[in-house]
Image (cartoon, rainbow, N blue to C red):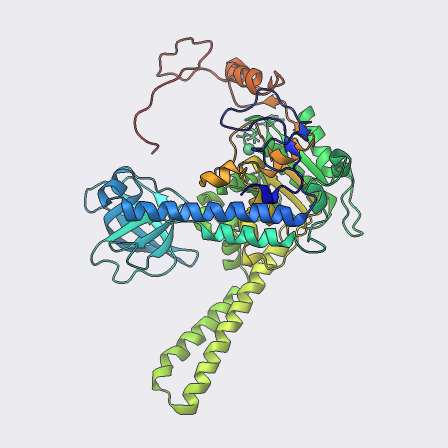
Length: 527
Ligand SMILES: Nc1ncnc2c1ncn2[C@@H]1O[C@H](COP(=O)(O)OP(=O)(O)OP(=O)(O)O)[C@@H](O)[C@H]1O
Ligand SMILES: [Mg+2]
């Protein structure tokens, strides 16, 4: 049933698929009713909600079905051979990561784990022999080494050193739930963001609407000037982001999207227009923003489990900052008292015992509220909060609002993920990405067929919003960028590096030393 959500079938005029388009065509909104094109403008919020709510439901169902199907129908040997499971592992506790238990799994003395698909940040399940029959424990991979896998676990493993363990891949239900929560907000009479109308594509002239000034409820913005380490196209994007309520910044690889993004975020701190959120779809991209901000001296803090954050940046997580908080001493004292009381409990009788139970309960409540107060304090004293899109739905943020939101790598995020941060009362939005590079990953075939790979960024481009294009790349040898410039970017891409600055790496016989490009067959998997 595709017809039910097509209340406003204004569709894109280009066929979408595996092959990317040759030329940018930002004014491509047309009313051709091609039955395979997803809706891109939504007059009714209800249509928008129903469509995306269904797509992410399919995505979750199909992901879980895939995991389940594999577990039920594949033999252990096949799961092992394809790297989806690790069997007969030995385990031992291996310290803590900010209060969470770390467990190290290995294959036994001198044995290697072999090739497998588990890497840093993956959600896994842990059991003894059969995840379908047992109730597995959840974990997140902290570190992968040749002979071992370190995992942060949600609960302690019972009799950890006796017997062996099994690890499988898990599905991400949390992400689904947070996206559903965000989507529901659009159904309110007054959605939490004044950008809702524009983002649904309702205004006749989306560019005019996007270029209007953001409204910050009476806060006057201070004037700021672009830093001198931005080139011309980056400077234009910078000022648009200072003045407009919605901007798209598009840039081919290595054109300084992230470089510009962190300077925009810093510019916002100088403008003084309320709380700022720096988001991205992946943990790696958020880490890059965080790193850039810290380098510029911006007070930035990272939301998210430390296990998913790059090691050098873990000190900037809310968790780490809370551990250094002055109130922590009080918490430790309280915990000491609690443990004392707990120890005395078995010896107590009758009324005394009842009162002790009550005191214990109240004690834990006090500790929790102190912890919340510390987290709130850490968040409020930061100039910029950094988080993944899904992480922006985390409890730790309470009902904190962010009037200024920038999302890097926005073309890698499925649309509902993008709405999670935006629903925190966004009044000004900058989306950074490149719809000419890979679209978001979608597991469900039916969700993909129905358009879940269309990011918000790309949908906005299709309804006619003009992105600010960054046109100078600083990463590749000019001969490499020559191809992508011609093939994907209308020959608009310039080079900020010379051939001399990118000498061909030694140790390989290049077919042409002046144009060091070669395709090399690779056996085996990524390590
Ligand atoms: N105006 C500039 N002058 C000099 N170097 C720059 C400038 N802008 C960016 N760079 C450099 O170019 C490199 C790539 O920048 P950056 O990582 O921000 O690009 P990107 O567009 O985000 O790349 P990706 O597509 O991988 O996300 C970095 O080393 C950065 O320091
Ligand atoms: Mg980048």
